[in-house]
Image (cartoon, rainbow over all chains, first blue to last red; front, side, top):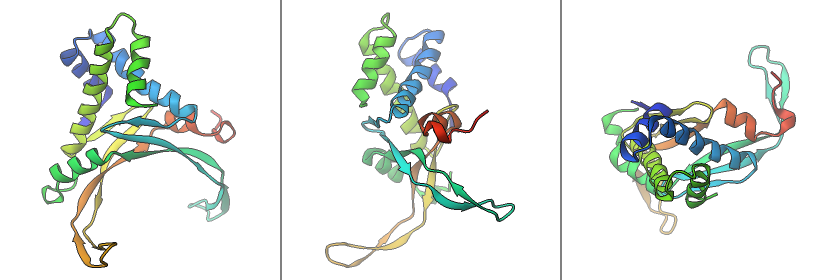
Length: 102
Length: 99
């Protein structure tokens, strides 16, 4: 089972009473606001779910796996996600490995 | 930005909606996302990224206070992988790949 923007829009239609158009736009706006903040270099903290943070990675040596040639991996800024304690513990309690890997 | 800042920003974008609708929308979205992961599902948001569960095998840990060995059972932890658009938008302009 995979959750996508289409399913989220259906939920907003059913549970919030937005019309189909508004629901679709709202889902898009939700993720766009998060992207805008991260693009500005600001972290995003969604209580009960988790935090999105930025990490500055220095340049490091790498290799082209095909040719074996040494090429530097340039310095970059990346997004990291840290699930909240609440999300981690509900996943741990409700989704146990005994029931198989996802 | 916090959850309530996000609610305010969405409410500003949609002046025709009540601010409690923006609040409810954020709750519905985050609950659905958390619920999907809790059931072992995946989340795929194009242009943003995907969330899935990573398996952590059982291991022998130690109580940091007493030093006693403790068995830590296997578990799954939520994992996020940023999508292409998000990755490119947060990176430094100089390292962005040219189209």
